[in-house]
Length: 85
Ligand SMILES: [Zn+2]
Image (cartoon, helix red, strand yellow):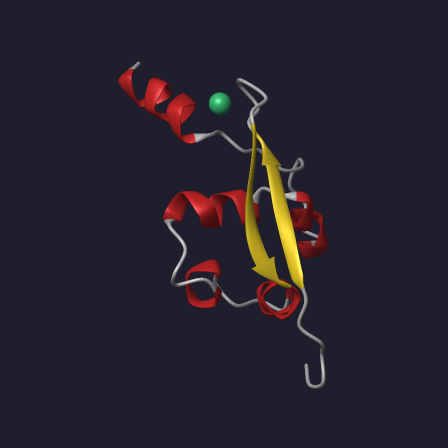
């Protein structure tokens, strides 16, 4: 996709367990790359796995148009809790 302008966006994901909202900054062109099919790891190599998870489970998830039941984000502390169980 050529000629797209780059703007800073904030991806927000809400933890399904404790309802904590976490966010991470993304560029609009990065979101475009991701929606067009690039792996999150390729688009955001500088982000941590948890930050990529925020993007993947954010309001932008619906842009992927995938048949999955909406964003499902679990924050770091809650996923640690799950792993212990
Ligand atoms: Zn949580």
